[in-house]
Amino acid sequence: MEKHFKKITKFYSARKRLPSYREMMDIFGYKSTNAVYRLVEKFVEAQYLHKDERGKLSLGKRFNSLKVLGSITAGFPSPAEEELIDTISLDEFLIGNRDATYMLTVSGDSMIDAGIHPGDIVLVERGRTPKPGDIVVAEIDSGWTIKFFRKSGSMVYLEPANKKYKPIYPENELNITAVATAVIRKYKSV
Amino acid sequence: MNGAPLLSIRSFPRAIIHIDGDAFFASCEQSRNPALRGKPVITGAERGIASSMSYEAKAKGVTRAMRLSEIKKICPDAVILPSDYETYSLLSRRFFNIVRRYTSEVDEYGIDECFADITGLQRPMHMDYERIAEKIKSDLDKELGFTFSVGLAPNKSLAKIGSKWKKPSGLTAIPGRDIQKYLQTLPIEKVWGIGPQTSAYLKKYNINTALQFACQKESWVKNYLSKPFYEIWQELNGHFVFPLQLEAKTDYASIQKVRTFTPPSKDRSFVFAQLSKNIENACIKARRYNLAAEEFYIFLKTQDFHYYGLNLKLNRKTNIPVEIITAVEKIFDNIYSPQTLYRATGVTLSKLGPHVLQPDLFGSFIKIEKFQKIYSGVDAAAEKHGKHTLFLGSSFKAHVLPQHAADRGDQTARKKILLKGETVRKRLNIPMFTGSVK
Image (cartoon, rainbow over all chains, first blue to last red; front, top):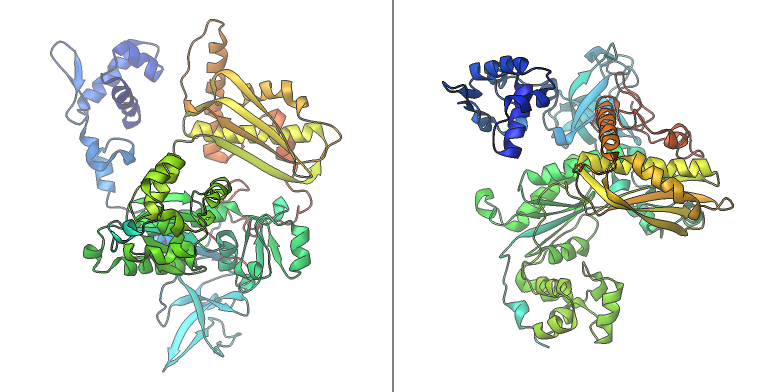
């Protein structure tokens, strides 16, 4: 219904008046004014529109209420939508600082015991200061490597999650580029 | 001469910063692949000329638009990559987003540069302007993984001088009282907005540096130069004249689409298809902003970099490629010659205006309306399945043949990877680290 009503608001903002029933037929592509009538009843019920005793239409209480949420939401806040304000998208769930988030695909099994498999997509945040125990992406021998970031005393090193591999103790400086924030593994291409 | 106006402004009545990505495209490549770090990296392989080069390549003498054959001569270890505009655009967007954390007044001047107004932020941020500029720069350097150069000044022209002053990774603040110092040695042609014509003209009056220009009397500047140069003069004297353009671009004076293809081709139908595809692309952009054009300029670029072009006018505005291509077809042979090798085609739509449909006497109205319905379907399909899901038959050859046959295997590093759920036309909008992952 919001979607339909958007067409009315569009008409209203362009023409500064509400469309007539006949114009609504065109707007919604209906063949009869009766269909329009039924739709208008719904708008009235939702208080988007108001109908006086003589059947004339005017703006309803909720006609302008959408401004509160901003026009970017492109529709009217139905009660359900208002409830949904407190939910987050999968994007927001997986990504903290969006402008610093990158991804890379894993090759090799050095982190397999941490549940990171070859082919997995790792989301990483660039420029974040790593804490011991974080999974990090570091620059080693002109390539990337994903490992646990460890600290013992004043020494920092990288530790794989696979007994087959040895920890990496940096000779000079350890170049940590990013900190892993999530791993994505898709089983179907959806 | 009179230096007085330069001294009237002390620090920053307005605080404008100009931020410039250092070797932006090449840096995007180096920051995602450590194997490229410290190496001379050049982008633009698909065009046959350098479009961006890393500082290592600049040090070897590689310049913008240099041909690849020449680059290989002077810099044999150059890493020459095809441009990955998708990734550059993603990073460009992030660049502006990061600057917008500090101020909403951001002027996106190019893919790799912007102006921002930070006037009045000292108090809320408890920092002076220079520290704020520093902070923005450090966020950018850290989160994008390569460096930016920043100029801080009382206006755009001076901020631009500041960002160029020390590159790469410089931060130059030009408070009012120091303007002279920076203009003194700056050649006049290096001032933003002063082209070769104007600088040659000014040199006749013995004006060779920016300072000499800034010190001219106001009456002289007004009498001898046009308004834009008077405005530059005012800015060099520390006044704030050029406003920041804050709106994201929805209004275009003109829309241009140009694509190079390799190898160069003589094949009429292939060259025409390239042009046709450009026209389709330009129309996609026009439709996105609900604009339509009345005038069109089409051109072909030959292998030896000559241009052959034609202007054409329609009797009303349109953004439907079929209409333009039909008109182009009739005149194409005026610019195309079968003996010539072509390397690029292009189209410019101009006289843009809002798209309105006007009924006419000859009933073409109905036909146009039909086209419009078709194209709203085409755009809907593109929205859902990716650009060029549906395209015109006249563009067919440009769509099915690779744009650059020679480097068929030389796609961008990102395009070689297809994640589950991605399609060739639509990829995840998060930049990817490439190179080896161990």
